[in-house]
Image (tube, rainbow, N blue to C red):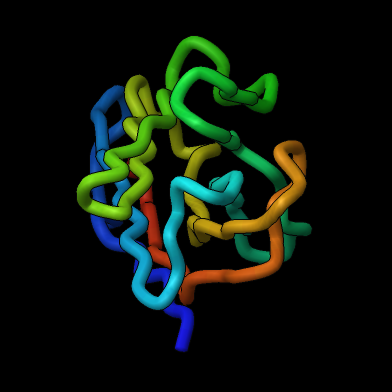
Length: 118
């Protein structure tokens, strides 16, 4: 059974940082593109970043310069380092794995809440 489990969300003040983790079981993440998505209350889900292998990375415009995606194949994990957070970053963050580098979405985690206070 494939499982993606996100962790690392929480409450942080504006300007702060969080590091989200996505750990997989039943799936070897290094064989897939992995993406982070987010969905704010009342809004559509949006893509944040993707990674394939270790050097192929994609960032949405709102994430460029503030967020960094990385992976640790030994831990079967992908991370999202988020710096300079603003209240607009408040959302549930999901990780997903799949074949498509720009929109991986075959396997999904349950999400982790990120709340940024002003």
